[in-house]
Length: 174
Image (cartoon, rainbow, N blue to C red; front, side):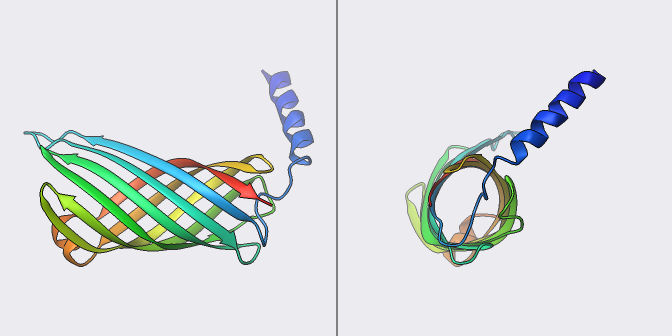
């Protein structure tokens, strides 16, 4: 076991020097991320939800990214089908852009419209986000992201705040 750990450590150190910076000023990238949740409540009220998000971002500095965002969510809430579509913007601050693992925090604000089983409503979706990305190749990263979404306007009257954990990939043009 001890030899295996030493060999793995040496391999990791050798490979660490071959990785380029994950993000840098001037990089443009497209993200695609998805999340799914299924909640079973006692006495009924089961909820199934699928969330898909796409972003096109640009690094204005080595640490700061701005992006345009599009989002779709399809929710089955105890027999009521909800379809939510939104567009907006996001910003992220990357803590270690020169490393293979890049943690980040940020925020987003979107305007959305929802079909709530026949009734249509709209409003703002906004909140913080944070995650970590891992550089697989010089142009492809995998990431996991957590979001806390607040709903404002008429959407806030119909939907509760939501915590999302999403996974996805990034393709960069360097």
